[in-house]
Image (cartoon, rainbow, N blue to C red):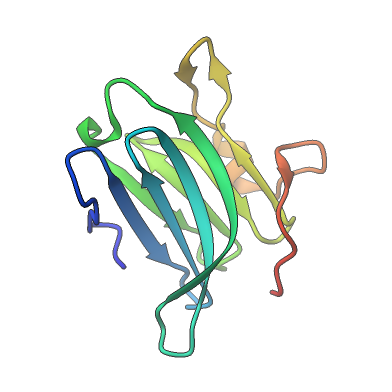
Length: 137
């Protein structure tokens, strides 16, 4: 799965994904026209996306829809311990495998605000976001 591929089956669905640099994980983002979620998957022995280990709610229906955004991709840190959903240069969600926490972007009224760059640069703190399901690193 590549970040440049859109696997939507109709005019409203959208799916992208990216494997971690070490090849152990795959993070996907899916918008089915109603909600947007990030998922973290195992990678099976054939190097393919495996089972879903955890998920992160990103939003309910947004206007304009995600398909109209210029850039939507998954970004991994080089150490394979953090993945973020990037939408038009804004970070909307993070899986932090090192701290075993996940966080979605804050809301201001009905608008999504970007997560600050400092959150991307460091591990999530115990009072940020929510715990991930336990992963074997």
